Image (cartoon, rainbow, N blue to C red):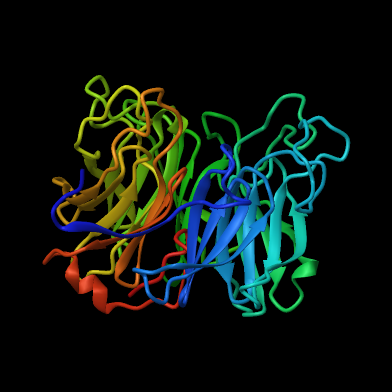
Length: 414
C-alpha cells in the first residue's frame, strides 16, 4: 500500500554476514555517492551513485546493539549499547556485571570503502545508544555527544550516578587517541529527568549554536556555542501525551522543533484505534522569542493492526525553501512524508507501507527514513535498504539540493 506519488525504485536485501534473525538494520548516514547502514551485526557500505541500482561495496561483521552510525571524512563511528566482552569486533555479548565488560563507541577508518578498518574505541558509561557529531572550532577535532539511558542497578558498565551527557573528542588525524573530555550536566539545579540520567537522542544545529535533546521524561533546547558546556535555554514536558522523548528535528531556519514520542519503546502496536493520535506521535514546537511553544501533533494516519509494531521513529527534513516537510520511519507503519509548515495543522503528503510482516507480529519495518540528494532512503529492519522516489509539486524542489555529507543528528542549513 503506497500513495500514488511515492514509488519504490530499489531494494537491497540483507545478506551474510548481516542477515541473521537478530541482525536488524538500524540507522543510516551518507557521504557523497555512499550510504552507510548500521546493523546489529555490524554495518554495510553501499554505492548509491545510481540510486535505482545500489550496489554493496563492503560489509563488516561487528555485532552489538544497536550500531547507530555516523561518518566524518575518513572516519565511521558506531554506538555500542550492549555489554561486550571487549571493545573489538570479535568480542562476545557479556553480562553487564561481567569482569572486563565494555560498551561505548567504536571507530573505523573508511578511506578504503571496500576495506573498512577498525581503529579504536572509547568506553562510555552505559554505552552509547545514539550519538551526535559536532565539529569543533579546531577542524582537527570532532566532538561526539553520547546519548544513553541509565543507570542500571548492579551493572558494572552502567553504575549510578549516570552522567546526563558524555562528550568524546576524536582527533581526526589520530583517532586512536579518542577519549572522553567532558561530562556536562545541563539540568538546572533543583530539576531532574524523570527516569534517571541520560538522553535518547540529541540533534545539534551547530550553525545556529543550538541543540534539541530528547531525554527520558523531557525535551530540552540547548545553547551549544561552547560544545563542551551546553547551556539550557528551556526544558519542556508533556506528561499527558509523551512517554519516551525519542528524537528531535529542527526546521531549516531553526524556528521550530519536532519532538517525537516512542511510546512502548518501538515494540508495541501504538498506531491502532485504541491509541490516541497524540500518543506515540510527534509534537511540533515553535521557537518564539527563544522559547519553545507547543503547537500541533502529527501521527501517521493509517490505522495498523494489533500485530504491527508502529510508533514515531527516525526521520529527517526535506530541503525545501519556505516549507517545513519531513520524512519519517514508523516501523511497520512504513514511511510517511508530512508537511508541518502550518504548525497547528500538519498533514501527510505521501507514504510507503508494506503491510504486516506476518501473522505472528514481531519487530519489523522502517527503522530510519531520510531524504538525501533526491531520494528517500529507508533502513528496513528485516527487508534491507529501500530507496523511494517521491514526485509531488510540494517536494520536487528538494531534488535540486545536493548534500556532500549527511549525519541526520547534525543538521546543516541548505
